[in-house]
Length: 305
Image (spheres, rainbow, N blue to C red):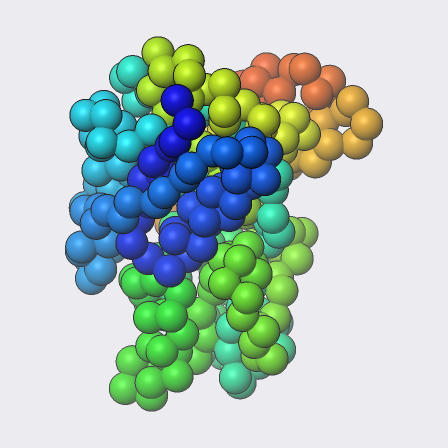
């Protein structure tokens, strides 16, 4: 095999991410041909309803996974935070590329950060994780659901008729799209923990496609893989999916892994925070351990929103 076909969502960010993986493959393998094929997912086609009400973030991956099973494509590139915890039948995440920025960003023309927003300001987010942590810090703010790609959300922010004073986006998305926004203000992870896997790209292929796997394994970044394994193990240990109000961030220092995680209720009235550390080879166990600690502190009740 000397050619590969990548499946990508149609959004500008998804295409940018897929082309990043494409370029990495072309750099690594002389003579390899790689093309990108675009798909519309259910999550892209329905840009109005809140994600939890229409099935969660797995809606951004289903069509690509079906295309893999039908051999229409050889690999799919996903934002890891959108990918369900369990491997889809017959498929596997062959590589997790080196992570970009993990933090969230407040985009606003009337404030320089969350602390600076006036009481009653309207903040746009479609994430229960962000909502829970924002309301825990600023219960006086009003949250309003917002859907669409990065460009769409920025346009809504700038349209007075939409009624947003600020929106919250992922730093990694803005960076990959090469946005230089003067009114984008990074949010410290001490204030809002990111989604498990935020900033990382997952490269998915068929589990039995050894020829494709041989090309893709070179893309795997060991430290990123360990960190996101711990984060996703925490989420999985809570028995939930990627739309839950759960944040997690793991850092690697030499061969040690430090994991922080939070579980909140939808209103932000209570947050359960846990943290721990372990060997980089114990990422799954560390995430499982902290999930049990959170459950012992009542996390299951918080997730019944």
